[in-house]
Image 1 (cartoon, rainbow, N blue to C red):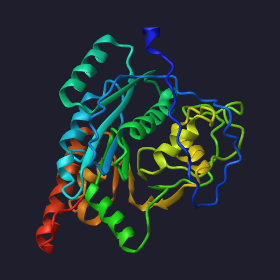
Image 2: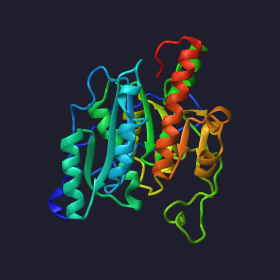
Image 3: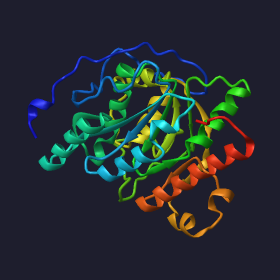
Length: 318
């Protein structure tokens, strides 16, 4: 890949306002140790208009064209958000395959929802993708209040999710400096061989701080510029979920809202075979590998929501 793509950027630093939780940061903020030295190769800076209040932030891989199209046509379609102005954006890195890269550029021209930075899109570079999302949101989507962050193999029941958010607000819970997710507490660092092996040199502690699996979560948008700022001073760590929602989050004293019971991992079989799946099991986030199952699942979610509105004579949701 052309080395000229890797150009140093002027970093965008914002002041962090520390709020609640039991974490404190003793890290001195006088030396930048993780300059994010990449530029936008593809950008759609006008994508997030001034009245956007919900940002759908999707991590995707260069060759996942079908996954992105599925999200555009299902839960990620901004038309589903009748009570909100939603913006859908896909974040990815550079592909070394010229044909793939050419197709991504055509895709961006067609849908105007692609943001691509000049780092190589690879497993060990996923943390760069999270930092890129923070940078882009800070620069170009200042009006957003809520960020729904998901991978491109997720289905999100946005109706149930926003009913939950509305319920929290109706209880007087001001959602600021908050991440809502399936919080993982006191997870041991994997030292054995395998995909998640982390050496002592990479991470010396025995346990990770509380963090969220990045498959699906919700953030209040006020934390995004703070986390981008903190990323300049937090040494790079390749386990992106830990770095983003663990290490960065603890430095700004993020409040976690536990959503463990609302995250469904895997089991397409259950969705395929159980007739009353949507009536008996209602999760907000579904991790589904099979695209046909994802499409069917969304159809059921959407149909259930229309039936609910009709039954209770309710106005538009989400």
